[in-house]
Length: 292
Image 1 (cartoon, rainbow, N blue to C red):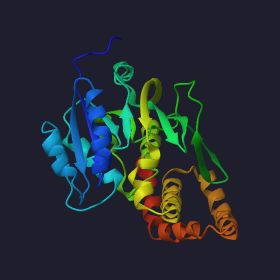
Image 2: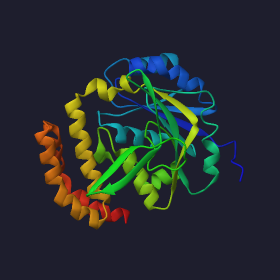
Image 3: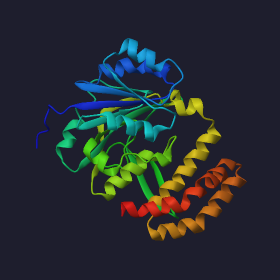
Image 4: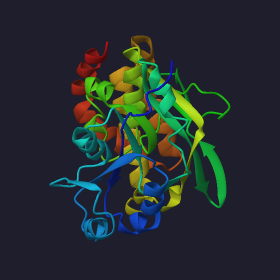
């Protein structure tokens, strides 16, 4: 089946006080995103992000939030503003290679395809780590996820910072869950829900994104301890939403032991993440039946 070349693509870029990143990477994003429209969702920035966009890219649509909320809410606002069949999410700390959209778009000729992730050449400690394909499995009541080898096209999730999505399916799924604000696990959660609905998610190694991960706002604005706390809290949210009942029972047994082990190692932020997650435990558990 041949993909219709006339399909319009909207590139959505979430931004929060990312003026320096926009100045560095936005020109390349625009240059290498052929036949695409652009939406930048500004998550209540206090720097000169908006003036920079207005002065240098007057054709880019700007959506502004009234208060700082986080990644999931910001991206959802961008997708709501889009009118294109396909939306591409790019972070402010990435630069796509020329014609990166070409390998992605044909996949959407399959009506079951929801999302396609890009090859992420992640710059980490001076080295390039190939990311973009994930693998995940349930073990002792936890969802274990890690980077997969990039020689296959299946993936457990697609990254919210370098992937394309079918907007109609996104809307049916309700988009990213704001419970994961400010960051982490929202893209894994969305991908997991999509597969439960019978949608397909893929990895496309020929669509290449250079990701300057260490420049990103998370590492600049949050301490390592805060990142650990938020990540563990959101991991618990994901488990409570999606774990099969057999795994949920294991989770109840293993979580106290796991938290205690981390405390012995000096990782007190894990306990804080657990405490932060508890108030929503019942609410999130009930919501799991929305996805069954």
